[in-house]
Image 1 (cartoon, one colour):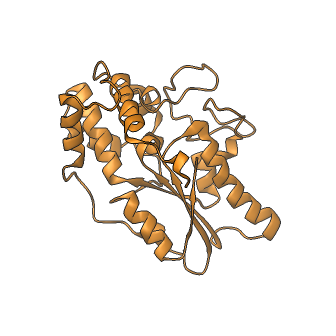
Image 2 (cartoon, rainbow, N blue to C red):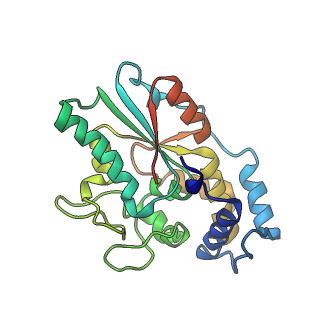
Image 3 (spheres, rainbow, N blue to C red):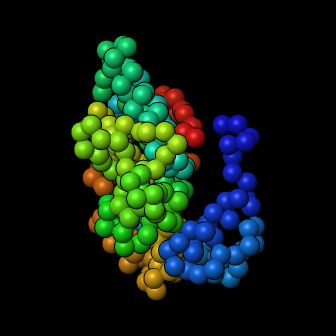
Length: 241
């Protein structure tokens, strides 16, 4: 990752303020300034939240395989998913190597956390507006998970700088062996923000959202740990811009 790819604190806080407004918290604070609501949300998100016993099944099979973990903090219209598709399909076409001999592990956190949830959650909690994702057809903030799936021969549903083939969708990639992991810390942050915006407890929001995760998603305690675990097992690393 280059220095230009690392979001600075001012930009990150500004985007979080925009997220807050998108899901109904209210007017955004000035970039780089944390108001009382921002501070409370930060504290709620950083406090120990619910977490299950770590499920390390996503690490199985890395040793002895061509394995790569993809660091995906921003959706960018689905362009990062195209890289994962190319990794898996090129191994298959050029080297005749497929799953389970080729593994792709995609880490969802930050502004890609909403990609782990179904259409009902995207509609109810305005996750498209919150994560700055537009629908390719309507050009408005997505009210469905435009990354989850696409019909055969169709494009991915997210608005992007280039057309992204539909076989870059999450379900299409899972069908050829991709694994998707979700950061528990990021999940807690989102549930704290949504709970604050909708006058619910973070625990209630989390329970609802866990029940509405896409099939095959695995929650990991922290993405920074998962990146370390994957590389310790022998996986290579790629940052998805």
